Picture 1: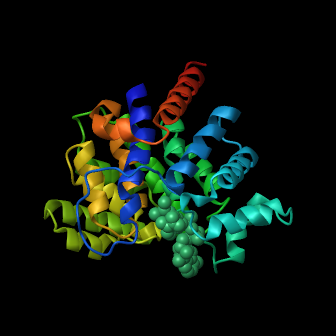
Picture 2 (picture 1 turned 90 degrees about the vertical axis):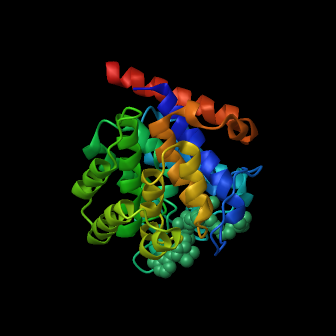
Length: 303
Ligand code: F2R
Ligand code: MG
Ligand code: MG
């Protein structure tokens, strides 16, 4: 287990997010190569997940919920989706508990937004060698704010992609094998079909417009998680993967963040351009958290 992959994943998330932050909502295809001065809710919530894993030496739903709320109250201006702040307020008012699927009070059947998937990377890192446990923990970490099946399965596939990237030695990636593993593990028909389409798009070296049409670039998990996985698989280094992801527009910060998490976990921190690392907001703290998570995982693996 390589510390460079842990750092690459967390720093990669924040860089993809900061690169896409000013393009969120753009409807046109255009490349950006300079990161913005601020990351958004995607990174803020990812930080909450790592802080909680470190604090509790593993997953604890009450602590993770408390971190989300605490970090939101400290920085409510990070550009959160409409659902999570309303859920945090319900919990603060003491009316309900986290596990009551509070998002179902806001959306029929719960939220299918990508808010659970965008923050899930640290769980993919921490449980990278335990796929069954990974599914269980992703479920529990998601339903704090997102209980729709498509949001949970999207979060699981994103976490599983991170775990595969950590498990794959640099320069040994077989893109079709990677896709096959994702297809074998998903139990959702809609994601399975998108993964099949991805195989064809990769073979055809598809145009960006086809990628957007077939995979999507929206705020829904089903229209952004496959796009992030594809952005990683269709490119050959960290920089090109995140630039590609963000160039697709739509939910650019989130697709950038999720692509950055997978690409960073595969290529490692050394592969991330220094010009971006030097400019990244809160970079030292994010690297510190990655180190602590790696230490904790190393300790628990040797027990
Ligand atoms: N909030 C944003 N961007 C808005 C602009 C921010 C601006 N730049 C600023 O600075 O203020 N981005 C962030 O939100 C997305 C993640 O959202 P999340 O956490 O999933 O939120 P929510 O509310 O659960 O769902 C998002 C939207 O999905 C649709 N939706 C979900 N479930 C639905 C259902 N059952 N039926 C119908 N629609 C449903 C709704 O449109 C929700 O608003 C990320 O992009 C993050 O970057
Ligand atoms: Mg955001
Ligand atoms: Mg977004």
